[in-house]
Length: 220
View (cartoon, rainbow, N blue to C red):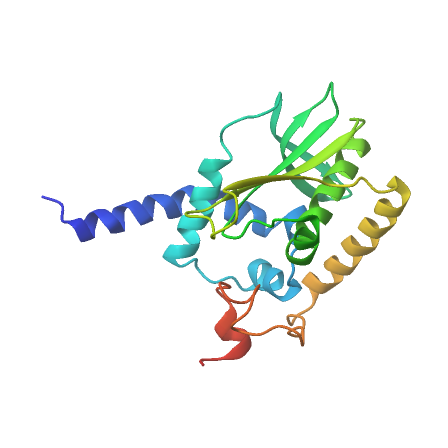
C-alpha cells in the first residue's frame, strides 16, 4: 500500500517530469521571457549554472501551465521566432488583430499606475509580442494583459483584471528590441554572472522567491 508521504513524492516527481522537458529545451534557447526578466543575473544562472526547482517553484510552474491550457481566441499558444528569440503568444485573433497575454499572479494591480509600477516587464513583453506578430506579417490592433489571481485575492482587489497595453511605434520598439537582444547575448556568454542590482534585497521582489537568492546574498 502507498503511504500519504509516498503519494506526495510521486505527485511532485510527475510535476517535475512534466516541467523538465521544456526546461531543458529552453536552457539552450533565448526566449522573450528571458529578455524581459527583471533580473539578468537570474537568467544567467538559468542558462549557465541552474539549480533544481524546489517543490514550491515546481507547483507554480505546473499551475501556470494548467491555467494556460484553456483557449480564448482562435490562435492559442502560438509559437513565433524573431531574430533568434522565441516566444509563445497566449492568445491571438488574426481577423480582429487582438493579442492577449495571460498572467497568473498573487497580486493583481488595481490601476494602470500600479500596473506600470509592479509589472512594467509584462507591458514590455506584450509590446514585444506585438512586434513578433507584425514581423511575421500578422496585424495587431489591440493588446491586453489578463491577470488572474492565484488563491484568495487581497481585500479590496478583484480576482481577475484586464488592462489594455498601448502599442508603441514599430520602429522604436524594433530598435529597443535589437539593442536588448545584443546586450543579453553578451551577458549570457560571459563566464561570470552580472552584478546584483544595487536596489535589490533578499526580502523584496523579485528576489523573495528566487531559487538563487542564497547565491546572491548568502545565508541570512
